[in-house]
Image (cartoon, rainbow, N blue to C red; front, side):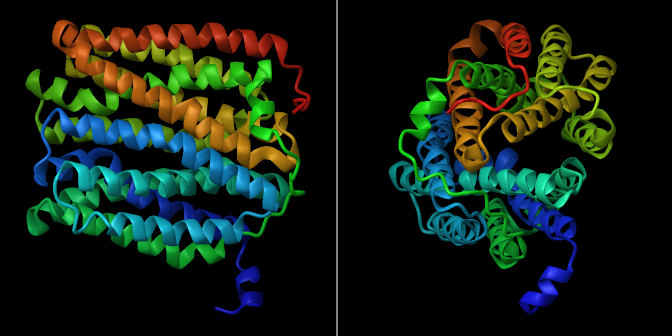
Length: 389
């Protein structure tokens, strides 16, 4: 496809396609990478160390790549490079055997692929504001692809074995690399001033923003790492558990589809506050009962705890952060606002699950209660203007 022909394809379609190829791999990595790690011989104690290490190192990768994007003042070529690096570093897992080799390869992969996802979000939001399309309706194709990736590997594993997990991940990353050139070339002014990261981390409003999201997004740690085991112990079969997870993502997709009507009426800070309220109710119910009817009645709240809070965060960055510094803000949100808090919460579960069991979800509810306090403070103090960074 020639460059003029590429430009004739609507930007929303091109961005939706890239979201789909990027999030397909994420739909395999999130639920099934621990299964692959166990297949490669890692113990129950070693797997959380590898996963938490990958989350912690995002602090370096996401922040550095985001800062570089702002320094250069462009996104497209950097994103194209990240897709190739993501593919190469995940391919390094193929020959890796043993804890240290797998840890080293996974840390390298975690320096690139999460930054690719974060920069994709930054491009998606910037292009929506510059080119006038509905960000949420484009972003929902990432969620659809996430589900398809999860379902695909579930169907393929009986044929390929657990080792097929890595090959499907690589196939998805290859598709991302092959379609990255379709991403729109958004070019905010380059931010070549020094101290940009320090400026964000010393800004009270941005710290409140990070705190809200660290608490509400970090509260998903028990859901991602323990809910399936908890529900299996309660007697629910794997098919039912899969349907519960699918319900959550389905309502996430529905929220993205309807967000255009919601966003003009609701402030980004209000969306984050509502995400915290949803988490209080959702995690409390999951913490006190495993009754299937009750679980079905609260799983739709994934549209609040993740999607609503995430939409609020994306539009806060677009509206509150300087135009030339949004990629740095996105990197800090993805690392400090999600990855580091998720890693800390995940590691804490190893100490809490034994004495508390399903009660760990009540700890997650308490995190959401704290997020509401921080979100209310941010909502009261941010007047909608740009931050002084």
